[in-house]
Length: 567
Image (cartoon, rainbow, N blue to C red; front, side):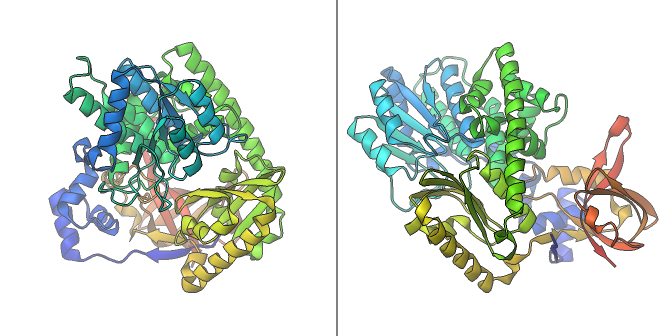
């Protein structure tokens, strides 16, 4: 897909010089910080060297004090607490986080994850009735519940208290739960609004530990919450929330915990993912670890993911990790079949948005397929899996188009919807799909009329540099800006009029180029750019991300090519 190069505006030389000197970084890195809208020196220092002490008080979250007091009462009275989570990685890690915490303070809890196909997302009436029969006194939801009005009313009628912890967009109407913890609700004072579900759950644990300690209800050995950041990082990265602010702090330390921590389930997961012994980056979580956990909720048993992350038994975690790896392979085959089938559809080329449905699609993988279609066609995409007269859909958005708001304009056709601007889920009746499709496409068309730039993905260039400016110091400084992801992309540079010394097709669809610029030769890898091979002449402009290749303990700088312009 063709991309528009956007050169981020050059910053004031005086400010760049000041940042460079005070922070002891290169002018290139100083410019990147300013490009990220980090305009104060103190803010820049905290970005480069994040600290857990900069996490805001969890009691700024509305209803946190009320929720904590209710949980402490339940602990004192030995009530039955059930943790209810979603079946994705964010939900699974949230459940594991709370179960592990309660285990560590010697309080037994129960947990429940709904079956994706039979029950769908969120709370449901049948589950509430089941909990009532089992004598559950208190339900804590994680990563769900903010829109589940009917089941919460039923729980109230049955005398079950509900503490809802969620991060999805608040629908404007408050659920009648005992407490609602969601940074997006009206009247909430928490300064960072883009937490993941596991980020909200972690705030609950921080507040709960502080209150238990204050009341003298903890033993001398207090739970070390830093050890839980591996779960927080995994759920946060997998849920594609911005890796800025508090999320960045969580993930910075969480990735260290995934790399060096002693959680058996994570160790076994790294082993089956081929990451044993490596320093774990956000990309490793997003593309290798999280998909295996996600496979349990998509095409298998979501309880496997939780069991992996709460077990202290080496043999059990090893077997679960192997099973999750097999489930992930199964998931990839199902996903590939659906993806290839959709590529044959005539609707996807001309329409400004993709809205398709089928009774042959597994509901557990359509979200991933939607992401792939967005990557390929750069259009808001909603795929709907049908079972008889009901459909469950997953949507993915593009930059500049708020998917949640788009669905809000279509809610008359939907039974239920939820999510955020990048990703969402819907429930819809089969007979309403065509009306919904027509309305959704109209909304996307209107947005394109208002803002034509959203039709083409932007490639944001942080700086134009020369090949001889790439050195170990600069790459070390770039790593200080990590973890990279949504909201904090890895910097992209460009070099102009570099000479192509050699080009070679590698694999099925990629290129390896040897490029000469400023008397220096670099090897570059252009993934999935084989179609450009014939167009590449003697001289090109190249957009790239530099990295260090440490193969056979020989360090050399190489570049990952993001786009090529033929001069």
